[in-house]
Image 1 (cartoon, rainbow, N blue to C red):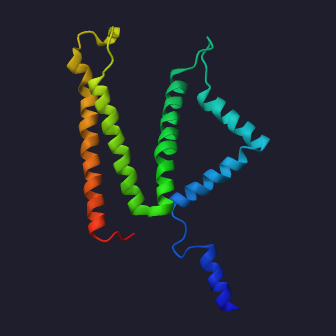
Image 2 (spheres, rainbow, N blue to C red; image 1 turned 120 degrees about the vertical axis):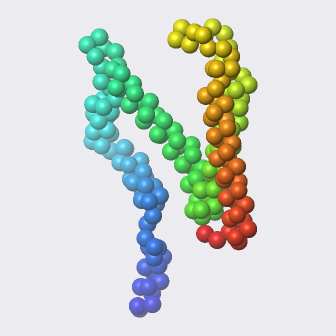
Image 3 (cartoon, rainbow, N blue to C red; image 1 turned 60 degrees about the vertical axis):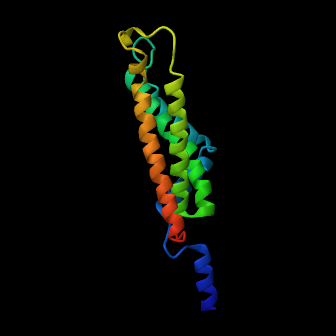
Length: 170
């Protein structure tokens, strides 16, 4: 009987306990189910209006509300796009290898995207606040992003190579 309990306990909970990613996933799943409850949905709506729906006397969104929406959209998009890929890889490859593959893929994609911006930077009339910038000066931030992404991409490739040479231990 005690042997059955031990086997059941090992199946139910891992000996290491839940890590941060598993806790976050559990919280997200609970929140995803909870939004179907009308009281929870109205509470989240009121919270959204209180923080991100602030308007001034003219009915326009305030600068703080616009900034908070931008920050929230950035965080959610990073979690949604990069986090989903990491989560899928984590289930098949393990934590370390999934992190390395996700990092290499993310920074490889950033190299390609920023390089395309360097080559095909916006053309046409320059905004009034950018008067005096020539075609090269407009491309400086995207060139810097390309170089930084390329360095990080190569670092992840080197780490993947070392991981493979070590025998791929989790």
